[in-house]
Amino acid sequence: MALRLPASRRAGVVAALGVAQTIGFAASYYIPAVLAAPMAESFGLSPVWVFGAFSMAMALSALVGPWAGARIDRTGGRGVLMLSNLVFACGLGVLAAAPSPAVLFAGWAVMGLGMGLGLYEAGFATLAGIYGREARGPMTGITLIAGFASTVGWPLSGLMLATWGWREACLGWALVHLCVALPLNAILPGGAAQPVAEEVADDPGAPPPRLALWLLAFVFAASWFNSTAMAAHLPGLLQAAGASTAVAIAAGSLIGPAQVAARVVEFGLLRRVHPLLMARLAASAHPLAALCLVAFGSPAAYGFAVLHGAGNGILTIAKGTLPLALFGAAGYGRRLGWLNAPARVLQAAAPLAFGAALAAWGLGALWLTAGIGVLATLALLALRRP
Image (tube, rainbow, N blue to C red; front, side, top):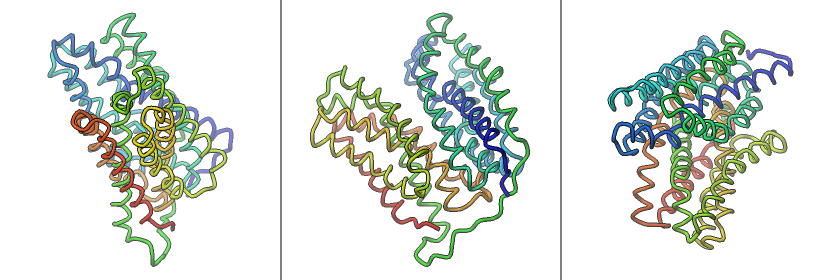
């Protein structure tokens, strides 16, 4: 059964893991936006090569995720998360010392291993092992904290870049992993809980478990694709809709607050609503936002950003809470790793694929992500509550 910890201890676990996750994202997922250009320039390359290396890292993380989840199921998450900090620090050190593009790619490959070991999937699996079916609140809690990863990461990366240079910035983040994130992960409860095998209820209308897994994997892949495509190309998309550069940037800045606000609402007012219903509403947010932008053009830019951001914020939580609610805590980590593996691969391809669509079709490229969002909503409607 799940471990029973006092409320104060639970808050400490959420705070420690949330801050460690913030560092994990800030020092991996968010550093290319600031450091890719100087990295590439130092080797006489186009930044496209660095973003390609980053895409390779995300694809590698998909291979590591199932192993990491299974390991967390057996031994608990503390050791795996601490290992991720060491791997991240090693990868950042390789990047900082890279004498050639080949070594730079090797550094990003190590970073990919760290991403598979230490980001949300591992954090969610750790919480599922500690709290069992009661992990929904803690999962929302760590996403509330880590939702500020870009808010923290981009300015710090920029400050270290301006003060020292991109190599020293990588070393700085390596030290943050070793001196802050590693100790925080080390204070998490040790060992693995032994959750009772919880099966989906015998509902004749429910899809077979294998079909349910495939549907959920598709939903996660679709949401990661849309989220990453918008993160990479939102200003250009809004400009294609007629918005000025200033309006496009201002609207894009609302996505982060919208994500956090939606998570706060989910954590407070909607915490008793089943995760499946929340996921259905969240998946429909992007197609609705796309319809508004196509219909009304630039005046709908702010509404598009808020709707998309809110939906994406809830879907991030659903990636942890929905498998737990549908399939239970037994084998959760390994299952979550496999469910998110296709998502990581599509996430790596999203910036290039949507960028090509935007260049070819302009605002019409939005029908691609809107269609994917509709299919994800239909897949969630096909799932049944246990």
